[in-house]
Picture 1 (cartoon, rainbow, N blue to C red):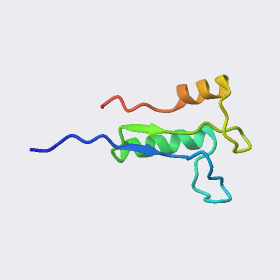
Picture 2 (cartoon, rainbow, N blue to C red):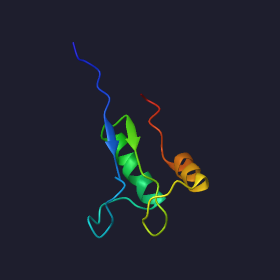
Picture 3 (cartoon, one colour):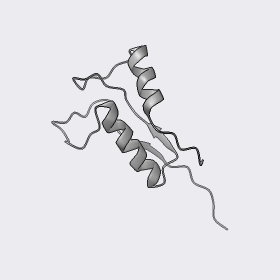
Picture 4 (tube, rainbow, N blue to C red):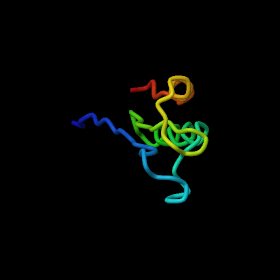
Length: 77
């Protein structure tokens, strides 16, 4: 018998910048691409920090809402 497993992936972190690691997804498009890749690899949940265009984190409601609505969802879970 197999046991179900939920995999949560943290695609960004609140501190890393492109200068730390060029693979860190900063833009919404990069976060969408990373999220889709994670779901295709088996992740069920994504944890992301919304960023401004300059890479700084933001809690701006419009930016957060846009990012939330743009990220893919894993509807198979």
